[in-house]
Length: 379
Ligand SMILES: [Zn+2]
Image (cartoon, rainbow, N blue to C red; front, side, top):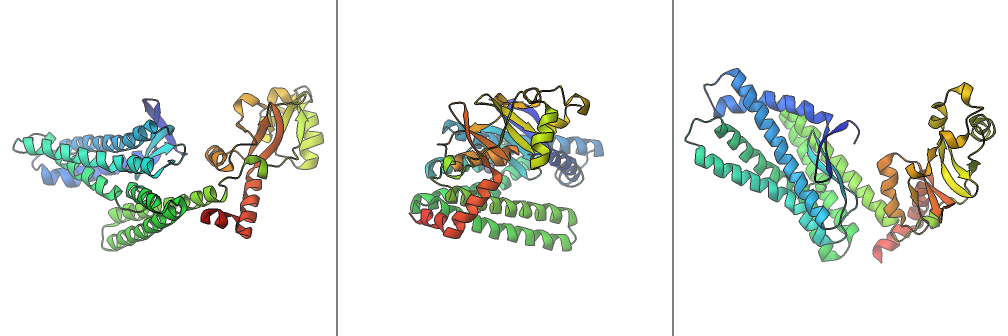
């Protein structure tokens, strides 16, 4: 996700923070220091309230992190790869490479997150119960964490996709109907309906004079709405390309350039006359790399005549390559995730074709027009 940076690594999972989370940290500290703590812990100094607000915000962040780690650890124990966790304005997201393969896996992966939040809430409530008589600074922090984690757990159990509850519901419908697409359609529909309700609630709050909370709630609703929509189109893509392999839609007519020609010759004889933005580079009959406009720009213009293409290109080791037999739906994440417009299709070191974004869209368009995807869903 752009705008996020890594803060540390737990058990091989990168923990990233999105810049929006820093903004929320400031606002949360401020609102706790001026609202929650003066009410629940009266008679202290402003500095104490800000300190309490800051500590409570950080602990809330730790709670959200534990919730996400629970998803990630269960996902990993079921054989799914977890790359990173991003914490941002609305909570956290675990970047799990693939969709779960069975309803059972999806159920346990989704359910464990809210479960952990509710457990943290109950534990904090229990601790609060033990120390509530004392005039300790820990009392208002515990009551805040208990309340927030229980809200977090319950909110995430709302049965609309992409919330955890939506995933739980999807796994149940998936199990009952045997159809992943139907389950996704129903739960994303519920998710969108909830998102509209949340936006409506935010608008009402906004006009009732609670502008800040109103805006936060409107943004939360809007985020849920767009997530539900993108989940829906993602699963539509998956369905459209189910059983379709790369060789069925790749472009076999690939323009390649030799590695030993100069950048000057590449620009004059290939890029300019043909309007190219990139080309695959060959060393004999083996694929050696990819050369793009920006690689050329990195070399000063006066050195173009002496610089061979092979020197300026992105070497093969740094390219994602795929094989003709791979499923299109498995290689799609390589394209959406990494800002890659084309993937080299390689068989035994030989370039046999190229899979482009345009090629995928064209094929999707044709499949939809012919109703191919619908037949597949029904079968
Ligand atoms: Zn969750």
